Image (cartoon, rainbow, N blue to C red; front, side):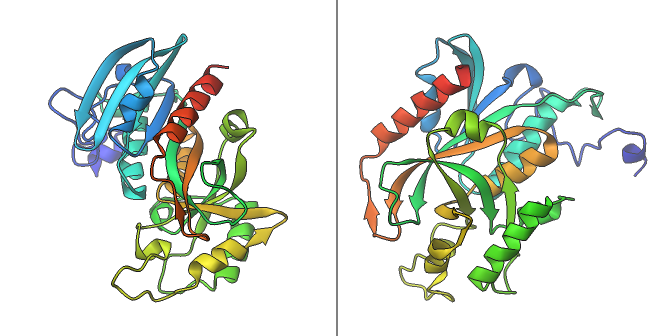
Length: 294
């Protein structure tokens, strides 16, 4: 407790590697660009960095692969997060620690640095009228994960009211964490100005939590239909994935600007799927890179 009171962050709370880098990402401040692209898939890092004019730094630890380089004069770090809001919790906290904590002194820096963070992913669409291959941008993240409740998160009044409407519409079970809403930043309009906007639902898993049943029986078979039918002043829940709610919530708390862009590779309402979706992802990558530079 004395260490916390004195402003020194204890070793048990800020875990560092022997070289002084943050524990999971193995990064120091010098490795982190102001502009970040997050991808889930380890293999997608090189799919992004292939367009860089120069790659200055590469590192991998577990599922976290990092390439930092330059694209048309803009320094960018591409980082794979793996799957799920739990991994986003690691990535966001350690990115912030790498740039906003003096890792040698274990003290917060007097001035905070803010990052632009764009997540590029693949997603399952929930609406009949949005075709496969569409680019969608998340105006809000709807979190079913409960992660944000471990932090002192002051949900904005409009977010709280909209979340209440969604919960009422979904007949949300009291056995589950209350869904929360977190809004994206100015990057939603900068990067996704011509993309389909809506609410992205972030599930806690790929199968049952997204209404998939292979062998196990689901407790609620109609959750996807209720998600599809929600609308508030034209704002709809347009897709399912597993990261955006935590990205937006933690980004808002930490003062970073966040945006998620997805290619719809499945339509859950129509039971459709794109087998070869790599060209769509590649086009989205090039779109995001150009709009970060502009």
